[in-house]
Structures are given as C-alpha cells and as structure tokens.
Image 1 (tube, rainbow, N blue to C red):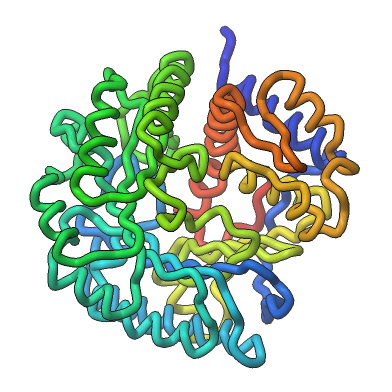
Image 2: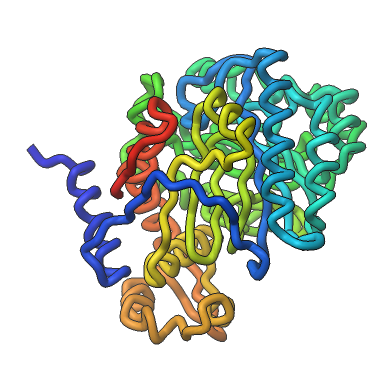
Length: 424
C-alpha cells in the first residue's frame, strides 16, 4: 500500500542530498563544547526555556513537566549559572537583537523572571525587546505588571482556539475573550501575540475567522496560526486534516488577513503593523539557555539535554549541558539559513551574500529559477517572495520535515538525556 509518510521521508532526504550536494546525513554527535565562539556573530538572539506547566497538553511536543515550586527554583538557580558560564565567554557586553522565554509556562516562575533578565543584562545588551509565552490563566494584572516591570515588552498567549469545542478537543481551559480584553487594556505591551491551531478535525474557515477577529478585537496586534502536527511521541489522539483541505484553509486565512490589511510576517503569522513582531526562530544566530534549548552559530548547532535532573547535574559541575551537536558543512549551514529565512516568506540575496560572502545565485541559481518557473516565488530587486502556492508547499514540506527529522530527534532525547548520536 502507498505510504505518503514514507514517500515524503524519501523526498526530504533526496532534497537534503540535492541541496547539500552530499549523500551524508545531518549527523548530531554527543560532544559538549567547553567554549562557545560567538564574539563575531551578528544579529544574534537569546532564548530561555522554562519547562514547567500546570498540566501537560497531549498535543504539545515541547520539553516540559508538571510544575513543582521547589524543583522549579532549583532549576532556575542552574539556569542563572548557565547564563554566567556562557556570558563570561565573551569579553565585554555583547549586543543581541532579542530575548524570548518559552516553555512550558514561563510565567509560573514570574517571581524570578526579573532575576533572570538582570543576569542576562550583565553580559548582553538587548536592542529589540523581550518576549514571553503565556498561558491564558497567566493573564492577571498583577502578574503582567511584574513581567512589564522586569523588562518584558512582548507577550504571546497560547489561546489555540476561543471555540469551546476545540478547547475541549485540545484539553485546554476556556479562554474568556472579555476577561483577556480587560486585562490587556489595564497592562499594555508593545506586542500582544496570540497563538492558534488550524487543521483540526471538522474545523472550518468560519471557525478560524472567528478566532482571528476575536483575537484582534480583544487586544492582539499579532497572531500566529500554526497547523496541527501529529507527533508520534505525544499522547494526542487527534488526527490531522487532509492536505487539500489544509491548503484551502491556509489560503483562506491568508487572503482574509490580507483583506483586513494585516501584514504577513511569516508562513503562519500576521500583524496589524510593522512594529508588532514575535518570533524566536527567524534569527541568524542565537544562544539558548535551559534544558532542550538550542544554540545556532555560524559553524554549529547544539541542543541541551531534555532532562531537568541531568541539566542541573551538569551545571553543578560547571559543564555546559549540551546533549548533541552538529558541526555544519558550508552547504548544510546554507540550507539551515535558507529554510528559516523562507519561513519569513522572503529570502534576500543581499543578506545571504552578507552572511556567507558568496552570491545566492552562484550557489542555488538553478533552484531559484525552478521555483520561479513553477510559481512558488516572485523576485524583485534580489528579494525572493513566496506566492500563496509557494507558502503552502513550504508548509507542506516543513510539516513532513518536522515529522521526519524533529520528531525522531525529540522522541529520542525525551527518553535519553545524552544519546551517543543521531543521523537525520
């Protein structure tokens, strides 16, 4: 019987070989860097992972565990120590673009967020603000006031859906739009983003349109509408939507947001204006702190252990908690750069050449020609922009990439703190 998952796995592998001009897989090995060379990295961001939640959502693939106050405080003590270890590797204060807190539900540690930010400020100068992910139950005036006082300028609320039917399907609490609106009116932030999931069983465009309208009406100036992905290692019994229906929904969402005058910032995100931004992924380089946090530099990509216990043990020994590292070939780094640049729906050939010192067309002229020929992108002044067709196929490919690669890696790392290695 024809297996589309197996077919797409073959396609993702074939694409990797074509674009890297090598049959070698991406090989992650168990090595721990004693020092991270980030002195000369430009446009670098920061990420902090706090893995504690009030409850575990079956559909969520991220590194998390049930909140325990004592364990959370012990973890944050180690997190602060990791920031000191890495921060001291650079002389002086390093300029970075942004800082994002993810999880988990980082606001469970609201009493220590300012302490974490103050530690980061010893070693880094942040130019574009600080963001944090919030659960709807975190939306209390007192809590948001503390976050704003600590320096947070952007918040992202994991609504998933305002519709009670889909809230129940996802195992989420009721997100009351009136309450949210009142709290957001009392405590203002530069960016208020709200996350939603699309392609759930029986979900229609009218359902999504209602979510989008409600979000902007109750105080959001930015939204993210992510597709549901059925990770093999989660306990979710939800089955995703067929690709044809998914494409129809994605196109309708996009066209509706355009009709309302919203800007498309990435494949999944839309904003009211250019000042409203929330993305911890689309950055040239970044340092990650905390369990499961990733670090991307010019020549390597590393992932911290997913185990809170093992993370704390490593930090107590004054050793970086790295679980796996890949040292990129030039072509591999280029593919990683292009993949996440494309996520923003645009690839700027001038920025690519600035980053690598090599013209984009010299490396991928044929691929760009074919992308234009098949109507996936348009080009103006060296900037390649995705069409609706291109955005869907990027989404389609990215979904299978996630299942073929990330699903395998995270599935292993959730049960093995320090695997010997993984080939993707």
